[in-house]
Length: 341
Image (cartoon, rainbow, N blue to C red; front, side):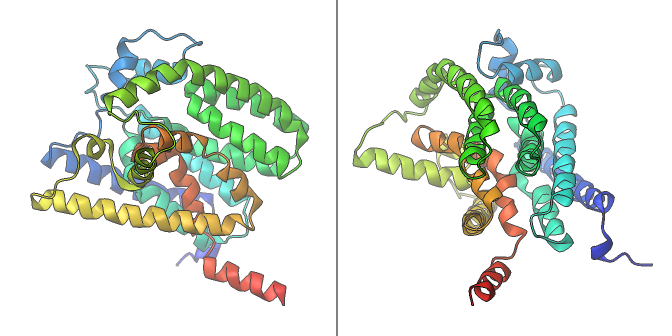
């Protein structure tokens, strides 16, 4: 007895996601065995382990999490982070199934596959990176868009503040979403969350600016001004955010052997995928207000383009961009054409 795709429910999609994600985890694990690549090590976590952070310091939530789950000088295999990530993605899939934006089970299956198999998301699921909250963030934004209850609007204050305490970049993302809900959806009840989260994000961003300046100094990337060199720097940052890991920002590219050539080709394929994803998402944003609201969450990415940037800064937007693949552009164009006649 076969089960048609039309009869798929959440459990079926969750099963597909878990199988594909498990395959991605295994590939990553065996890749780390036979190469010098360690997917479980993230050097920046060292500062969070030895540093003393209070709730008035940016990244307080993230630093507390790192101290709670990392042991043995950062080399301990971390199980908690991928589990938290997977649960978040499953909540996102459930939300998409229950608050459909005009797409069917085939579209959802495409989304599940791309979300599970994206290699860079899989890598960062093990690094206790902020993307362990990506599924939760996107699911909550979709719920905010469709839930028009007064109480839900005030619940968003609490949720957005928790994300901001985790990392101020998430606060800036929520700030953009609130702007979209106020001005595009006329949900003026979100003016209160807009002001509160805006204040918190601004406070943490001021505190974080000194560390950002130090990072720019370390990358020799401090040329900021209205001139040709700065324009080239921004263009490089935009390009690197679409396909290049931090390693290539510091040491450059090399294709001196077969392995490096394979890695480079894989990164170029990722670059192509991300460019096409951006195109599809922007095209659909003209007619999908939810997509337009989500576009306003790109504040942290824009800041990275103006300072320092590589593919890690694109990570929070990959689940958002993949949404552009679940409503075929050609079909959408045909629908709009028929309506205009």
